[in-house]
Amino acid sequence: MPYIHGKSIIKIAIAEDHEMFRELVSAHIDTIENCKVVIQARNGQELIEKIRDKEHIDLVLLDISMRVMNGYDAATILREKFSELKILFYSIFDHELAICRMIGCGGNGFIHKGASTSELRKAIYDVMKSGYSFSGLGSNIFSQINNWKRRKLHFSKKEIKFLQ
Image (tube, rainbow, N blue to C red; front, side, top):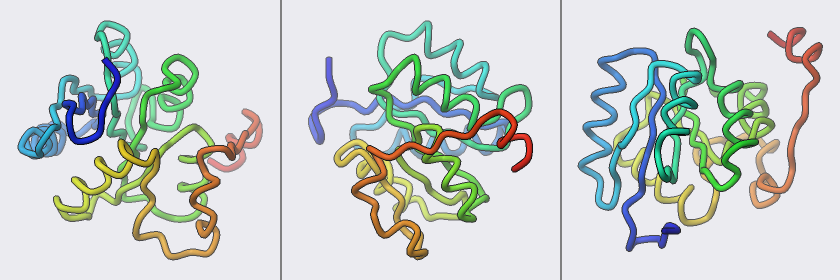
């Protein structure tokens, strides 16, 4: 069943390598109206495997820095296999290059790990309602937010290696 804003349960998967943080965030999300965490994963690879086994996921809350498979690589694979899936990155990395990479691999939004719980709720609802949420980013590189969904950045493997 497709998601209907305000009327459907938002089925959420979370990928975070720190167990306590993952469990705390998941428990909080479960208290948000119309939200339910249905998958918890330690890394991108585990997340992809678990999503393949689930019937339908609406949104992924995805950490960037994880062992085995990081968030960028996981998002790229998820975007290819599940194009309708919304991807909300969350990280301590909020510099322009990180944000550009999030957008480039198909992210629909970003929230800083230091954000408040009300900001997390707003980001989840914004991504599900409008398709994006990059609030709190003041740089003029992001002034064209309405075009982000259509614009994709593509990095070659060589460019990614250089950037890393």
